[in-house]
Length: 316
Ligand SMILES: Nc1ncnc2c1ncn2[C@@H]1O[C@H](COP(=O)(O)OP(=O)(O)O)[C@@H](O)[C@H]1O
Ligand SMILES: [Mg+2]
Image (cartoon, rainbow, N blue to C red; front, side, top):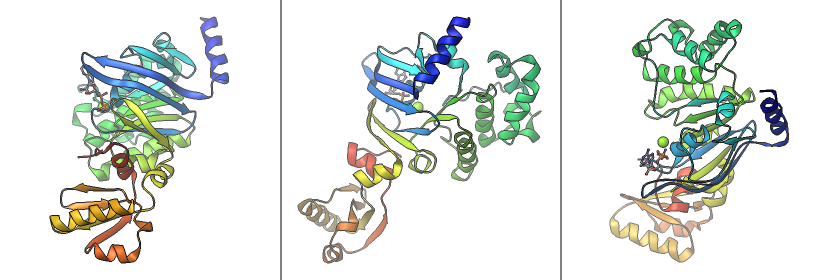
């Protein structure tokens, strides 16, 4: 007991990263869900795993908690080797799964209390810990309501509250706002941002660009089970998409002309339905833009980065 604790403390101090994944592979039959994924998450930041459905985000999360076992590769969480020491690692991290698993017949307070017990919060501190996280998630008013009566946004906040009851130093959130209305997402963002501000390391997955851009200090772009680019959202956008994009509309012939012209001039473009988006539009000479007809300038974003790198889309 003492030796494992000493070990944990020693590693905690020497290892600068909250999470280190090295060349991790996980297959399901023929599917390579995670395909040589390497990622370091420094302590105290909010890191986003940004990728479309099927990119391997949830599988990666599940391997970090020891719920799924890697075929190969190396995983360290808070200085502990996973899956070998996943029990110790799990005791120090909060986990919000993509799939909700609340006890519907229990109240909010009971849902959190059970986890406080499971996660070995001392009996003496339990009540206070439960009150603290319910308040943080703005659920004090609903503490005695059954989970089954909560709205979608409240349910998600309860899942987050539950994950925080043992004061973890690392929190994993798998698609924390998926399926929620945009205006309700804001409440969850405030909660996640508060965690980061209080020094907790956050790893969250998402396929929403706005979520990644607003919340994450760093983003790891995940495609087909690998990290294909990593950095601050603004740095990724500047590097791969420039400052502005130009959305051009018009007849198919016009769009084809625009694509050809961009190709000649070396500006990356992509067609989605009735639109051609041209990247690095800030550098296109005005007389060229005038030839393009109806067009709309907008700031470049992480969706542009993803499309540029993969040829695929993130959302929708
Ligand atoms: N338990 C499983 N059995 C079989 N295939 C799975 C399982 N879990 C995930 N997959 C497959 O692995 C790939 C990655 O899935 P997942 O990690 O859920 O991606 P994401 O969370 O990025 O949407 C997908 O092709 C998915 O169908
Ligand atoms: Mg997922």
